[in-house]
Image (cartoon, rainbow over all chains, first blue to last red; front, side, top):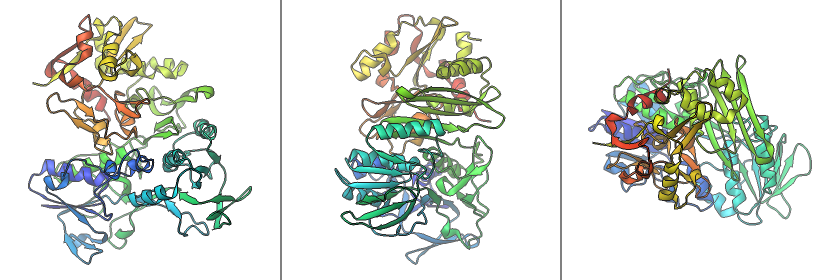
Length: 421
Length: 152
């Protein structure tokens, strides 16, 4: 049995090592197109601020981790998939046969349609190589414009601000992290950043990037004076890497369409991670989540199914955690609420603390936190177990901060132990 | 035979000796906020519930860690954070459905129970045997873990 995995990110690596655990003798090939050992994009911001060396970003740390497990690492790029022939074509001109194939090609940053965006000196922050380029051009006094204050923008923001640069963030929505935080939380993060000396322009669009005088670039906005910049970092969203599947017959929409067993429309071809439209636990719909926990869940499940098990996906919970210059925020599931649900909210703007819980009947379906770090994982626990909160729902509506008590009281074995019911 | 922490909340008096012992052992301070075991108080019922990592089989924290900073101690079965490798991204803190791996802002890393390498100080410090370190089969943890893994 020859398993081939395209993509050496978290989904691909977890799949490869899981396959090896399940099948000692199968051939396992992991194809990555970057000239580095498999590494984590999640760790790049920490590399940017020189908290860790390049090796600190590697997904697996022990020496010869892949060789030791007889996982064959190949540096190449897959140019097309021929499912009928169980064959791949590679950029090097080679072809490769597979018995089972996993598509785990991840996603890539989108380039917004702005005149001048293609110039040199305008970076995305996605690969280790991007990180090296940004690290070389930032530093105290550098004028940086960061386009986009989404999740990735905010993660880079921290690294750029720490370098001592003069940083301006431009976001077209009305708040920061609009796809992860509601208006209250998103604007609290904005106020926090402003308090830390970062200029934040929300509801503002970049219209064009022109050569500057005195500085490398002049950034033209839809309002106000143009911004000077020595470096521009673009973080305006990502999109699944599915281009190479054109003509393969494998069905795609935003990402590769898969079923609960991670199978694509082609026989013996599976997909996982940022490239796949997997099932969302909260909505039951298939969508691209593009987050680390989902990528590893997908990788694990895909490998089990490739090894012949029947491992069905129950759905991944969409969730994120973000540290914006020391203000920690997280959101889970249906944090934006639902039509038939109700909610509880606690706001303390002076202390930058916020907690929002979303219910359907007496079940927690979503949550948002700001300025809280202890035990936030139970929010996932409560959403994932769909535990009925009973009388604890009213208690949480009166005081959302009692979430941990509610969890303990409603988690069956503990409450039997304690006699709380 | 692997051992595990057995927690019997009915025996807990809320004295917080476990939290002090934990923070002293791991952080060299007597500060309950740095403890990896927490005692939750139910004022209405007058009860106390000590709570920490169950070293679950799924190891959600370990599975999701992007930099391989969480490993299994083969002797104790504990999932341990390698502090030098942890970058502080906090993904594990939202992935753990028990809420038992937490961010420590003073170190910029995450912390969780590591069973003190096989001699848990919380169990030693507990004056009422509400926390004991016993053969894993006896703790009834399997059901608790299965419940939290949940889903439909």
